[in-house]
Length: 192
Image 1 (tube, helix red, strand yellow):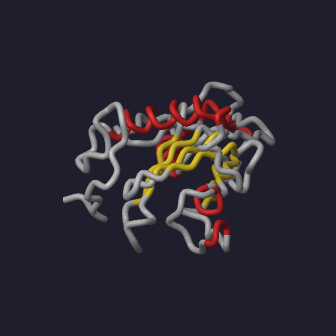
Image 2: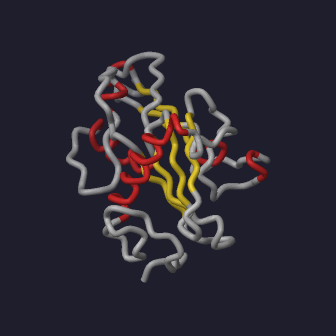
Image 3: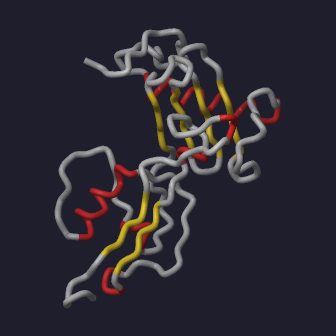
């Protein structure tokens, strides 16, 4: 305890740098070199975190604030993130079934994407032209083998595509009708 008070330290980043992965540099791509950032949380023993715990569950920066509210014993206002306290204390409950990431056009229309991951598989969809990528992160952590054409992974591809279609169904861009993804829709960098 620091001065008799519990403490928490969070080490993270807002993005990775790619550094040549897939021929890219900087950020703005859904690949692990940009999206899979350090996310390390430690705390004083009184907060009962499980020591040396490592989780492959998909978490995000939005989870920091609800986690801090929970640790403080305060009720969090409505927000996108989820508390990680149960996981930090060793609970094996799933935080979320998948994490949705996106990037609107910034440097070019081609780099816009939506992706879903459960920490084991990652599905990427490019709204400009409908290109898809599917990676097995457990066996291919550098995302070198796209599985979209592999008949053995056809059910995975269809499951992730349908999941993203449901996720995007209420978006104003018209990316989905709820059952299928619709490419080529206008995708402004900022919604008005």
